[in-house]
Image (cartoon, rainbow, N blue to C red; front, top):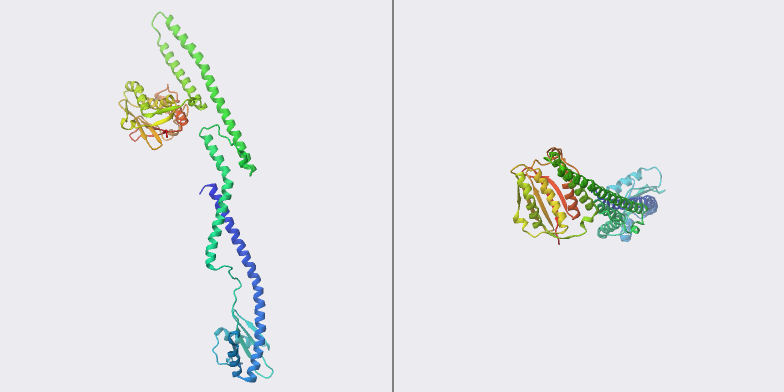
Length: 459
């Protein structure tokens, strides 16, 4: 269990239980220590009472005989405790059969040398007396054992009370843990929103952290961090925007100069001019992609949104890429049975078209001759997934997570297609994330690469 909230609850709960047990054991130990003194006093009182009773019983027996003792036992009723009177030969003078514990205690008392001796065990008290004109006699009386610790409640009441105490302690600990971790949970949610690209999240109300100086300082630091990150990214986007615009001007001049030079030539146009045109087009396309990335990062690209139906968009991308596919000897196949299902999303249609088109063009670029690129759409309850599969060489497991990083290209892609920019899939990810979706890459079952673009459907 790695949740901080539940760990705090369990630790508080365990602390309450340990404190309760410690208090109970300490209280019980105090009572036991007190009861040991009470036990000594009680035994002393029992011994004194037994000694007086022994002297009286011995005198009565010597003067009046056994019949007087029988009358005493019969007339005493329930108020008179059971007793046994032994003579010097350890015979019970009333003819009773005493318990073994009573006889053993009488033997011990009779063996003592002092004239008047009282001994105790857990239940019996025995005293030996020696009358001046008679043999020594021993009286053993049973005193009931009284419990020193008494339950204040009955077992049934304890059965109800203990679970109730544990439940109340758990509820109090739960509330305390929630009170302590709720600000942390709020900060975690804000941090997650910041990590997902929402640069405008802030802790609006710092008063909810006022019970802790540390948490209040952490919230203030989060606001400063978020503001700093937003400022840096805005500056970076502005820098990319400015430098891209600045590069467009010399590129335009170079293109005009090349065109004028080509017109002034009277003979055949050298092949270098075609190379210049291709490189200018490549650089111009790269600048356009960088500008689009900058707009996506700043959020300005989604200022105007509309309802976009995905099936017609997929058909349009497939038709536009058909010419390039024919040139490569590749077939584009669209799953018309699923594309016909309604699937509407909210966003910018042109950006969504670019996102899907970048994946399709990437698949065409890396697909071998006479292979198939498949566009499929799977509609679920709240999302629609556009799946593009190719039959190319694929990508290694280590490179799959980095496919959508800007300017990243695998070693094989750089060697086979040196004119690539490494911004197509990165742009796709930015567009999809700005529309609240996700994009993932994996290996195709038949070999090649499969890229899944998932978008939330319009409710």
